[in-house]
Structure formats: C-alpha cells, structure tokens
Length: 426
Image (tube, rainbow, N blue to C red):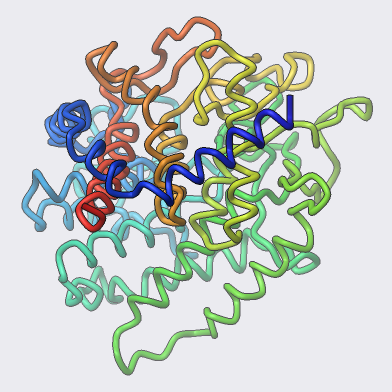
C-alpha cells in the first residue's frame, strides 16, 4: 500500500513539472474556481468568523484579510486591526475575539477599555496563536496596501510597531520554555483551543497540562519573519528577533520533528501528560500544525512531499476526508472527553487548514498536487452552496458555523496563488 502511494506521488510530480503549460491552461479555464472566489468575496463583506459567531476573531481574520481588502476600503480593515491593539493587555497579550458589548453574553471574562467604547473582548488562554495571528495579519495588510505609515500610527502612547513587539515579548515572557527554547501552550488537539478534560475547555485551570507543539511554534516563526520584514528603517528593536527565529527553528527540529517517522510529535509535555500511560499519542498525525510548519520554512521539498503523502494517506481512511482532516486517527473519547472522535477539532475536516496546505504546496512548486488536492474542497463548497466551518469525514455532512469566513479566505487565497502561477506558465 505504501509503495503504491509513493508510486502515484512520483507520477504526479512528473506531470507537474513536465507539462506546466497544460496544467496552467487547465487552471485558467476552470470556471469552478471563479465561482468559489466570487462567492468568497460576497461573504467577506463581514468580519465575524461566521453565522454562529458574533465575534471578530483574530485567528480567523488573519486568514481572510486579503479577501476583505478586495471588498472593503483599506481604512475599514485597518480599523478592525486597530481594535485588537486597543484591547491589548498591559503585558502585551492580544485577545482572541472582539464583539459588540451589547452582545457579550457567551460566558467569557470580558475585557473593556475606554480606547474601544462599545466593544468587549475575550481571550482563550489555552492557545498561543493570538499574538502571532495579529502580526501576520498586519503584514498582509501592509503588503496589500503599501501603507507602511500604519506601523507608526499611535494607539495610546505606543505605535503599532511597538505594540507588535510587545505582543511578541509577551510570548517570550509568559509562553516560553527556557529548557527547550520553544513556545508553550496548554494541551489541545493540534491547532485547537479546547483542553481534554470536561468543563470550560478554553481557559487555563488547575487541570491544565502545559506542553509544546508545532502549531504554536510555526505560527510564531511566521510572525517573527513578518515582523522583521516590516521593521521601519532606523528602528531599534528590543532584541535580535532574527536570531530568536533561527533558534526556534533549530529547536523545533531538535525536539518536535522525528526524522525516523518524518512527522511531528503531538506534544512535548512540561508538567505531565493528561492522557493515560497506555495511550500512544505519537501515532496521531497533526495536519494543521504540519501545514503551518511548511509555511514557516521548516522543511525542504523532499520532506514536504512526505508530509503531503501522509495527509493523503490519512484522508483515504475516511470516505469524505480531505487533507484538511484535523488529526488522524482522532483521540479516543476516554482520552479526550471534552471532544469526542470525529467531532469538531478531533478529526473533523477543516478546509480552513487544508487550504493552508494547498498554499504551502503552491509555494514550494507542487502545483499539480495543490490543484488536485484542492478539488474535493471546491466540490464541497459548490455542493453545499456555501462555506462551512468543518465537515464530518464519515458522512460528508457540513457542520458548525455556516458562512465560515476562514474557509472562504483560505480558498480565495489558494485560488489567487494558483491563478498567478498559471499566468506565469502559459
């Protein structure tokens, strides 16, 4: 079975590199891509994550901001970004979500400030991607608009650039392991924001098991690269962030990546594991974190091919799965009572991350693979006449929030990248 998979992989690579004009013509002529992009832009007239979310979440907004800038004036998009800085904590931390204060009744400990009247904000403390997501979103805004003066705009007594650095320093101070030289967070499923034990799973509590995973570290590396690229001329930073990024990359390879299996371990635990001693967590493939690792520049082309094949192999295990399946196999219910197998982040299929893997494949020249693996994601959007948060891999049924802007955003961006490649290779 493994040999067959590898044989297929080699053949598709050959097609990709020997027939670029034919592939470019096929991509250019694919009207289905036009339909999905147009539908995505119609949805991106709003900023909340989806129909079941009242909040503007930074982890979601980061993934659809490019599309937002196609349908909104830059000033309107910039104002949403500034709101997150206005709600920034005194230690530099960034909140997850912003919501109309009149609708703030979801049970979170909300944050308020005179700098953002009428808004309430909250932070899912188990995750460590909010700061990284905001820095990444700022880079996308600056690149798309050319508005570098935004970095010097003041929020209170500090500029946007200073506040970005405060956010990075918050991670270095409060979410950092000196022992391993890596970013920390609570134990969750891959990129998820829910702890295993029953209860309010999005907040740090006395059951929390601190750990290190690839997703948080890959997101931080991307944010550091973006921050470094945006540094205004003559500006002195508080530390050598290039050196920090290099050390994290080295430590990821040392502590999280397994050369023998060519995959990431799910967690490196700091105060014990929440799972039973008999449970082999290392068998689980973390797809979302792996995709982000590729985008962070942690892998060469040979490793990317292997990671992609692992995702494809996992997808063949379930009838309706794509490479967006969150983890495989999912955590058993007895190990993760807060989220049963094949539900939500525990084995649900999320184009929100599968689409990022498509972008990673395009970035490294695997165009044929990207186009082919995008097809089932496009099929779902067209069949369901919209974008959904996640899909049940056993039934194909769309689940979660309808009109999920994260899915719309990553598909829009992936199609843009494919079309740009096709334009260069006619």
